[in-house]
Amino acid sequence: MHISGGALPRPAETRIMVVANQKGGVGKTTTTVNLAASLALHGARVLVIDLDPQGNASTALGIDHHAEVPSIYDVLVESKPLADVVQPVRDVEGLFCAPATIDLAGAEIELVSVVARESRLQRAISSYEQPLDYVLIDCPPSLGLLTVNALVAGAEVVIPIQCEYYALEGLGQLLRNVELVRGHLNPRLHVSTILLTMYDGRTRLASQVAEEVRSHFGNEVLRTNIPRSVRISEAPSYGQTVLTYDPGSSGSLSYLEAAREIALRGAIPQQEQHNPEGAQ
Ligand code: ATP
Ligand code: MG
Image (cartoon, rainbow, N blue to C red; front, side):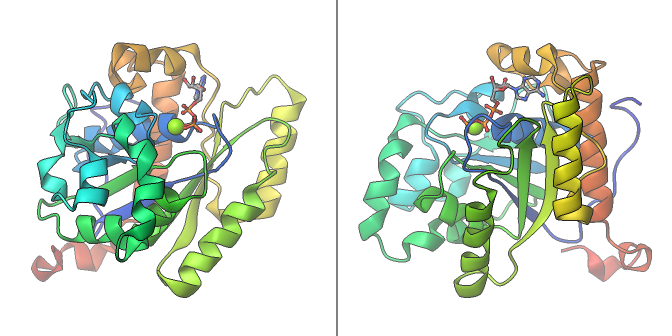
């Protein structure tokens, strides 16, 4: 399969996907940037929102995010329009990023006294006027106010799960938070996608974890697993996704395939796609 393998169906309306798992280092950022690049390379317009003070998604997309750069902090805390902080990603047409700077570390506390503190991001996204097919939000490894803002803003939760021992530990807490936000603040919210990452098919542990996740979640789990790959882990140090860093690598192909599954699951039924009124 190739990047030039044709456009994928575009969603009827913007799909806002929250990439979350409060466990650290499971592949949230890697998944966010590589899925986003895959979707953009297939013709979609995609915005990545970096909601982690570490700014790893901004780094991986080659986006400047030193302290003075207008960032998602200004949007959440200072009510700056999202359009004022969004930057285009070099090398990938149709891909954009709202960067995170270190300021964001203070936002969890600063937001406590702000009006409608849980829905700051949701408001910012709904006033953004540029057409978008996908918004992918990269969450920090916690369930604090930043992640809550993402859950209120989004409709779909994407959970990357690392195929290691303890993989499912702590997931219950994330799922309970999703339920809470759905019940009180955002009735559209649901877990749409589980993605197994850093999969090493040679180990029994990986296949056991995969089996356990599949029996637990069923349909939400993508058929495609993301393999453990050195190319995937090298790409961010060049400010690139694996899609441009090494397009033919197994990591790149697996993210393209995962993106294809996601796009097909959210595809518009055929007759609506031909309806000229259908485009929003
Ligand atoms: P955090 O919780 O700190 O935000 P995270 O969940 O966003 O972490 P990543 O930063 O995406 O996780 O990944 C953690 C580390 O694992 C990174 O060094 C990344 O390069 C590496 N990594 C992620 N996916 C893969 C993979 N498929 N193969 C090899 N290395 C990977
Ligand atoms: Mg991360």
